[in-house]
Length: 378
Ligand SMILES: NC(=O)c1ccc[n+]([C@@H]2O[C@H](COP(=O)([O-])OP(=O)(O)OC[C@H]3O[C@@H](n4cnc5c(N)ncnc54)[C@H](O)[C@@H]3O)[C@@H](O)[C@H]2O)c1
Image 1 (tube, rainbow, N blue to C red):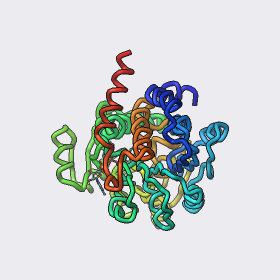
Image 2 (spheres, rainbow, N blue to C red):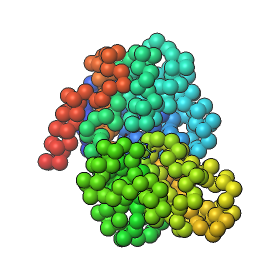
Image 3 (cartoon, rainbow, N blue to C red):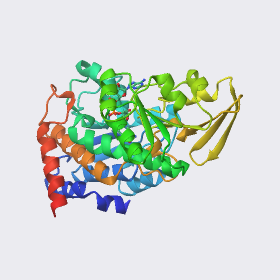
């Protein structure tokens, strides 16, 4: 926790500034974001700006040490590590019952529940992800408040989604499986910012990478970037590793089982644990046995003896399994600097109701970029 906090140079500098200015004085911030050491650094920074923080995590990614650290620092944490959707739902509702003035959301979980029982004094907030933006953009008229989407900052796109997710998904594959990537046939589903990074990082690790995307423009880009773009069935049949990173649901289902080769490894880097329909696959009639092969690896044995290995039960592979580290500290420091600045802009009324489910204001992007470059130049 200390190592991560000390490595977040931007958040540290923002914290020092917020100590003096107190833009969140008298405000309660409710959060529903992964509780791990980097988010701890963000929540503590918001506290330094005068906020009272009430936090819960995301499904399947909460780390017990992060919860204890936050509690010891005066953050009210609701719930703990869980993969139970009902328990998680109850925690999100408890955060909203405290009627926070600002919401820091990740995946749209808080805002969709806020709309079930809205209260007037909510000033607005932020949403971290693509998945959340997709859930919330059709509900702008109901939200009627500033809601800035961190994911849609160019900085978040290239610093975290492209470079860091790619790196950490590769790092997690290596850490969990300890298998070699050289010559390995890897199929990546989704060629958005995250998929580009995953494909690029496996490619740089000498894997033989194919890309599947429902969008022909994305497939064209993958092709011009040097990746194979076979049709879906061919890409699955040839894969030794399949990584989903689309933001969509049920990208791989039990219907795909006949296509998979023996010893294939399935991993998900997308936000929701439903990109790979793990429960459906495990309950399929052709499954003879399921066993825990190693920490973070479940092996599904089919009745024709083929083995399908599922990493971290389909939960985001870079935030699960043994010693999950998530994305690099530097990338999260940038993304969370955007978070802190955006929440400040909402708290101070610098953005209005017209700024509902919109990207980070460009002036904040420029400010954060300047600050990071200045730190690097020291
Ligand atoms: N693991 C992490 O640390 C991390 C970090 C950031 C974002 N994410 C998540 O990763 C996911 C992808 O994010 P992104 O920013 O790359 O999104 P994006 O919208 O930029 O790209 C998604 C791509 O997937 C494609 N796609 C959609 N459905 C598909 C399907 N069924 N088959 C194949 N391709 C399909 C889309 O056409 C698009 O090109 C999201 O769920 C996001 O929340 C994870």
